[in-house]
Image (cartoon, rainbow, N blue to C red; front, side):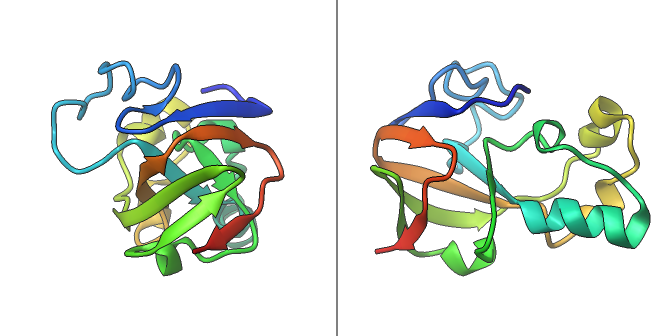
Length: 135
């Protein structure tokens, strides 16, 4: 995982260059919309404060790190980030593989706060600092 200042969101596919957009993700053939995944920066801060675990945004294995909005509130709603329109689908479940990749024991601490999946309704460019607005 690498940090980028911007990314292209492609309707029906995902984030350009992402493993799921390229069909190389473990669950690429599974139904359920893994076009975009979002993770709260507040969770990163809570891991540090509550458990002394420093998880960087590049380590959580989601596409976007958000701040200032409760992601579960976006489930079932259409929202806009920059010029991209998304639909919140469901909560992500934490993955034990994250412990392996990050070399940190975070799995059990991410239950009920491991981000959300979203579908791209209308593609475009996502940029760091874009606001999230419910439509």
